[in-house]
Amino acid sequence: MEIGYARVSTTRQSLTLQVEALQERGLDERHIFQEKISAAERKRPELERMLKFLQKGDTLVVWKIDRLGRSLEHLLKIVNQINSIGVTLVSLTENVDTSTEQGKFLFNMFATVAEYERGLINERRNAGLQRAKERGVHCGRKRILSLTQRNEVRRLYKEGRTSKEIEGIFRVSRFVIAGALKENLHTPPPTGDAP
Image 1 (cartoon, one colour):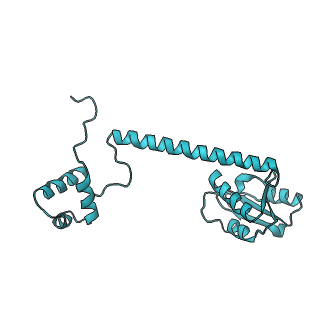
Image 2 (image 1 turned 60 degrees about the vertical axis):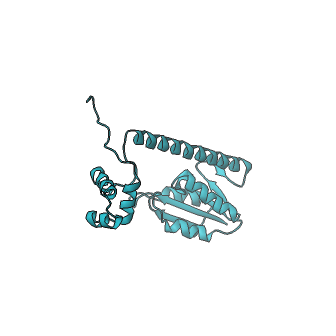
């Protein structure tokens, strides 16, 4: 059986073009799952319902591949999921059919590109984090204690105060105090052209 999936991003957009294209292929409207929701949404009820409805030997037909996945990685996850139960994917616009060798090849190309893209993103992110750390910028969640307060924690601890006492002074958890004590704190280097 051929099952259709049609999606637009907002309620103001119309599904008519997609539904008509699927019907021209011969799909019964009762077998076309329709959704007006952004691809960025994690929960897409009709997509989930359609994936549960699919059975071995079915063909999932979409007007365009991007209607299905919110990202290339998400799309590949869906394709792998339907392939594992013996369902093929057809995209009318891109003329892709995963029941053919050419269609399988295209999806392998997509997977390779997605993996390469993820690697580049990770590389750029890590390089950016490293540059930020070298400039003394804190990366991650905002600190509970300021630099001055964290230096004060270390001073109090060196004077013999217990962690418990310091927790009470700053009204923070033991984890915050432990983190401050582990840090190699210093005054950040001056910025600008000051000597």
